[in-house]
Length: 161
Length: 161
DNA sequence: TTTATAATGGATCTTCTATATCCAGAATAA
DNA sequence: TTATTCTGGATATAGAAGATCCATTATAAA
Ligand code: SF4
Ligand code: SF4
Image 1 (cartoon, rainbow over the protein chains, first blue to last red):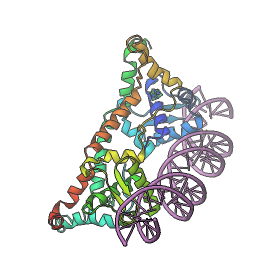
Image 2: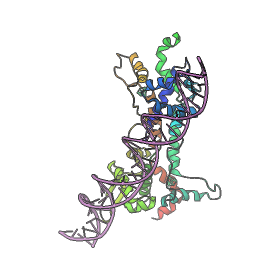
Image 3: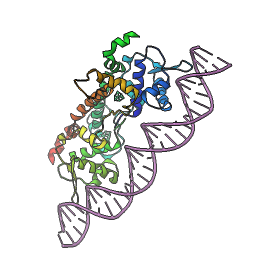
Image 4: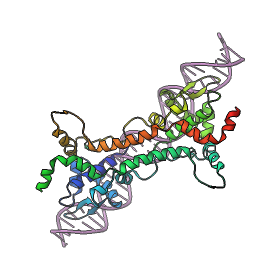
């Protein structure tokens, strides 16, 4: 259970874009060199980020990528969900097992009339709770978080430009 | 980014063991039928759980598995880490990229003398924070949590035995 | 001690996904 | 119009997850 390399690349690409926002449009070539990832592969990732509205892309001579919105509006969760997808951390496969009858159905039988077909899965309840914790944290941290921390001690240099 | 089916199976197997603790030793056959998973595959998973001290196993005629400790001492995190491994959620692959110099080394240069070789990776800092949130929650929920919720309304039945 | 039974671990196989590359084609600004 | 840059499909590779089989080992009971 790990985040994929693609997520790693996506985050770093966005950090790069966030850092060099002064002059727009960073080409795939520059990104590739900066991250040390092949252009072909990285372009797939950038394409995904574009499709989800995280970055904008412009073809042509002075084209390239730029952030589609402010760096503090791009959360870690956003990026991760674009790359990893939005399936739940835990998805039960065998709802037809004997054990499932015991755990889920029995609990549901208790409140027959009141809530006819409510899904009451205790395992999923715990797992979803855990996922919410994770998401909450990831929502609170953005690309800007990284930029602030990384370059807070060289504001001089930033002001020069 | 999902938990594997094996984790699913492991959790359910432990729930089963926790529920039928009255008479010790549940065989792989019974588990297999209850969960709807093949004996061969399930036995691999049980073997892992045994190696990590989550369950005890006894071969022979009246053998089988039983929890190695109380159900409220087996956390979700325990189980997940046995099956999924203990690697971090995020592990950076390209610490030799140009960008890494900027993000990590530059930050470190600031405090040269004071903390010579401290790892200061901002991305990992965020990701590890998120992982801690997840772990904290998973540590607070145990197999007993599930058993309590599932069978709290049939204590009568439990007392009969 | 013998024996039936149940877990163990190695080997193997399949399937699926992540990673990666290549290239023809579309889009754009100069 | 053209040079440049992104786009998306096709394809290849490697490794992990999922799954099965079987010979061996270990145990409790007879
Ligand atoms: S109780 Fe929940 S996790 Fe277990 S089998 Fe049913 S749906 Fe799946
Ligand atoms: S800054 Fe951190 S995440 Fe980025 S390349 Fe360096 S070690 Fe990896």
